[in-house]
Image (cartoon, rainbow, N blue to C red; front, side):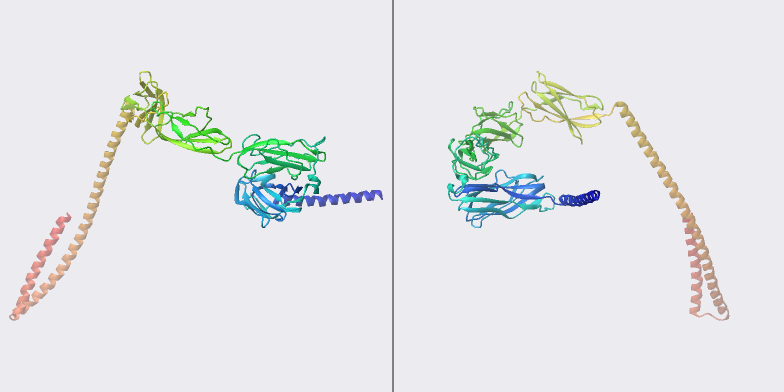
Length: 582
């Protein structure tokens, strides 16, 4: 019986394993299709006194890359008043709709995106809402609607859940143990360590929305905090809630201190005083001026740059010439900045001053740099055989660096450098083997101060073939011409022979045709003459018997004459045709 029970249990376990495997397989497949994302609040609970502020941050969590967030938050307008909305520390890169709220309707809205590669993970801060407690009771803060879109190119909504926050509000400190004064004693929390993403301790904030965070150790039940201009303020023994972050909006310029302490069952911790400074004003307008005229031989601009900032003070300058790179410069108190050597021509020099809070003001000055005299090419060959070294002489400023440029017609320019000697002379040897063609040469000088000259006049050098190659080329050219002429003569001779043959064939054909026509004409004329003679003979017989009438005598005479004339004309025409055909 016991053995039977073991078998039943074994089969039952196998069945459960099989069912579990199917369940987890289905769950895994489904998880591959849909990744969860959610919104939540921090803090999500706490007790607060009426009249105090409650900072509630909205966070997002996503298991896959998401890039768009939208939501509407509802809160009881009779118990909470939304004082400000802070975007400080938000993961949002671009706001499609700026955060807005209505205390009349008890709503707040936001809509924004995170640029590629999007957001993945937990703790993605969206906004911080700062409420003021208006009346006692329980205040529920929750999402009315919202969406989180996946970064999948299709905008799939992967939102799977909303968080809620519930706060207990009381009229006085005595109504809740969270606000009861407790003395500092043993076992109390350590003084909190303050962190800030935009306000370094003792330094200057970026913007005027300071945000702070701290770690809540185990057992902490209340937080008391305040910000003012006093470095030693005690925030008091009344709880401001249970939160690990807090931020302010639109803080006035000046030196501030954030004071905070924590409470557990044993009492309040020591106070942490966190100094931060706010400066939102740009440095005062200033003028950049040129101290001395720029010399063509020393083309560095000597600038006088002095800016003032009554807030956080001047931190640094950024100097830029035209569209070139920016150089960071810290004034040593002399207010003088010397540029690098400038190219000949007109330039605009920009000076941008930054204060310690990152605010900036910019000014500029226009300058012009004249070129030094161009070098002179004094000696060069007008022609040079291909493959040989090209040597060029030049005169310029002693110790100047000369850049030689050489460009083949239709090609790109090449360059080489040479230093002028103390006498102002230099020779450049173009080591590259130059091929046959026409080359243009010019030069530019740079003196030891970095001053540049204008370009020299351009000269032309023709690179020719070597002598043997030229002779070979001439022979090849002459032979090519001779072969071409001979080919033309042979072609003409062939054309003449061909034409003559065609004419002979044509004449032979015409002669045959003329002979045939002549034979046909003779036969026709013989028939005509025979017929005419018969008519004449008939008239002659009639005249023997009687005298012909005038009409008959006239016809007889005409027949004889026409027959004679026709025979003469036909014989003459045939003779002429035969002569031409021959």
